[in-house]
Amino acid sequence: MEKAGILRPPDDEIRAAARTLLAGARFGALAVLLQAPTRPFVTRIAVLAPPGGAPIALVSGLSRHTGALAKNPACSLMVGEPGPKGDPLAHPRLSLECRAEFIRRDSPEFPALRGFWLEQVPKARLYADFADFSFVRFRVTAGFLNGGFGLASALSPADLGIEPDAAPA
Image 1 (cartoon, rainbow, N blue to C red):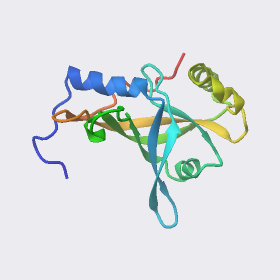
Image 2 (cartoon, rainbow, N blue to C red):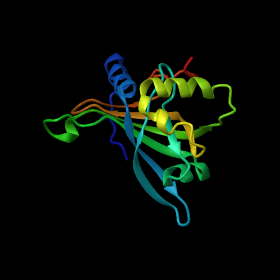
Image 3 (tube, rainbow, N blue to C red):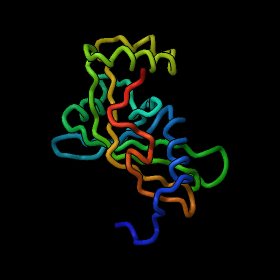
Image 4 (cartoon, one colour):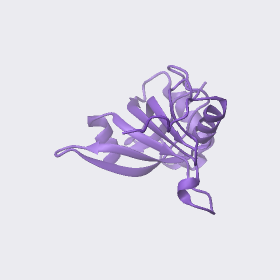
């Protein structure tokens, strides 16, 4: 339960900090729910956020997290890593509540996603076209910035600069 008065309302400083974390993300911690019985599972994935768009990932159908997302698209994604010095909990991080959406290879937006991904992660050319790989878009429903002492805020997709239905051009 969140204590009243602890969270700051989103302002320009908070929005800028969150958007910087999201734009700079190259990997993140993905939390999913495994089935039978339901239990949480966290893994590290490569992730990118196209300008103005929801974060995306290139995932293998052989992975546990991909199977879990196919059964239950509710997930959470955390980006932001501690720096080389200081208390790891003093470094900013952004947690996102999301719904995963698989992008089919025959989707009109697939070529743009593939091009954007390969531009940012050239080594992915080795496996991006394997049949078991697909793109997942993380439709953000809410965000939470923990930017260090005194800088915590609940955020909307608009606060994060995520435009509805934005895809890379």
